[in-house]
Image (cartoon, rainbow, N blue to C red; front, side):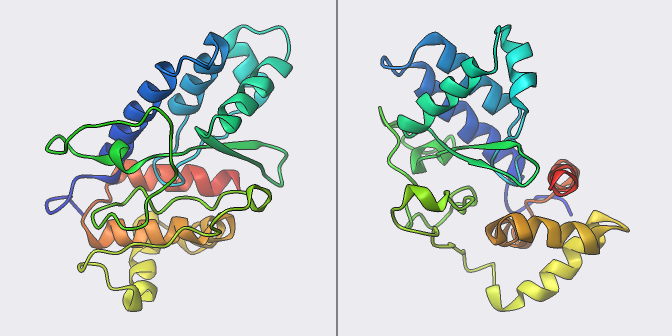
Length: 216
């Protein structure tokens, strides 16, 4: 289960998250409160679902705000600026998903150039695990579902067999947890299957998957 051929998914997420947050922090049009909220999003980010879901009362407490209206406004500011997608779950929790650019995922050998504003996910980057993202809320319109990218090592025709392997790795409740993630967004399963075939799934990724599935 070691990631010898490819770095762990969490490492890629951590790198993209840091670059995303840097872009937010250097944006001259965002106020300090909005940038503080962005840090909360990054701090709670799940490396499997690529979003976070801290409750607004919790964020209010972390930020020391008098009202939940403050983090709610900050979330809307980030959404309008194109830095996050925002949706609510059936459990009345908001889910905040950073919008990563291709440059956010570049490894240390990449050119390292950034964008002053996010441009959405590119659909022709051949080595991306992160750009298989959660589906933006339908109300935002646009392209619809992101195209699922695959390297030659991932054979989508064998997804069913890979799902069985993932269920076993997730433990005794794996047969329940994986369908929960699929109900949240099928692209999460596609991302997990591809990452597993690339040797990019470790204990941290499995733990993140369990936590995400339990809260659905």
